[in-house]
Image (tube, rainbow, N blue to C red; front, side, top):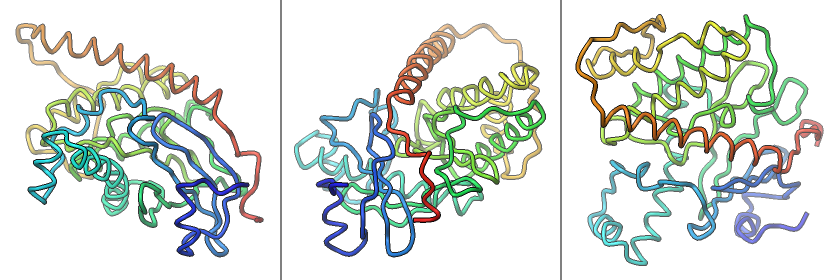
Length: 295
């Protein structure tokens, strides 16, 4: 296929030898299947800020630190230079998160670097070499749902212990290969300790995953992993190998209307996001019918 303009510099520099096809196009980026030597990988091309429709980006940027004081001041003022620097921080956030989470024991695609807004990374495939399906497209038994849900909760815990919250986790941001779930799409990952929205983002992430698996294992709908995990985190007792029960005993206090309204708003936003993801999934380009292991 014709080489996209943003990928051409990588071809010129010998990082990419061939662009085979477009895998998908979303709100934040377009993903292409590329050949690097004899290896098939994927190239995630981030969209320009004017084209990106990711909502409430400021809420996700909160707490992100920039060491260079000039860059930080420019970003705060919102100047042209500052917006350019903010874009670089946004794009580098994903590759930084991928390296950090892989080191923490979370299954994510292996990154190979970010070059001028193009992230080169591993193409996740199933046991037959086809592009791995998203969790949204996978049917499973009750037993498998319970097992994979526990795996996902362990990943959420490891992420939190590494200081990160995905921030947009759902069945649309998880791939499933022969070994189980693989978490993807992390440019909006937030600092768990520095972001004021951390708790409700974690709660939304966990409940999105819970609700999906509960379609196959209804008993999961009654679990309270979000409250249990956050409670342990706040008390400094959360460890990467913490044993969870999914049970949380509420402390009876007067209702905090602000928190309740925040949770309602978050739930409404999550549902709108879920519908948009479903629409994208139905309209996106699906290359899963091609077997790239033989290319």
